[in-house]
Length: 195
Ligand SMILES: [Fe+2]
Ligand SMILES: [Fe+2]
Image 1: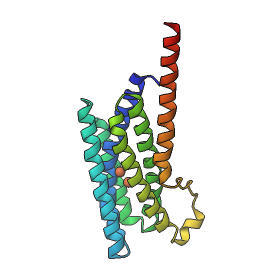
Image 2: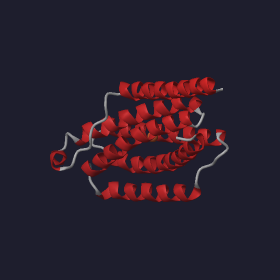
Image 3: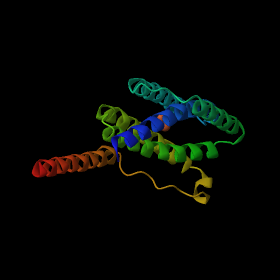
Image 4: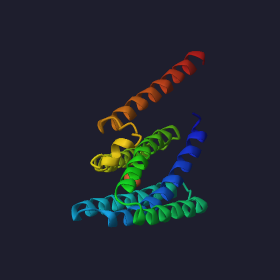
């Protein structure tokens, strides 16, 4: 991928994540009210805090790139977050847990993709922070999946593939990093040979 294309993808991802984390925080606020125990409510509120923290971190990355959040996306995700929050009030316990697990599964991959795009666009300094957020999303997916699986409805629902062990997030990025470095070394060597 060309660095310019990688940067475009990175910015687009960061704008999506910035807006998406707001939607998630709004949804989880309402979701926490459907909790069955105080412990469960606190766990969901902690996840909500972590999404707010992600939004701030992603916002700082956008600023460092000289970019800003995309207003239309922010509005759409806020609307979606509020719609899910309203659904949580009538949707009972299971469906919000199940939906959150599915969403978090996607978030893991999106932060991993962003870390790769950061590397390819010459912003490897963001990679560690993005991988850390992927790891936090991994914890979130696990929480919501294990909760959903305690409900009788779980066996009637389609199941998403659970993520690989958490360590794979850093391990697969390291493999990607080595692949990119090898490619750069190879092209430098061939430039040297032809000059
Ligand atoms: Fe998040
Ligand atoms: Fe999350």
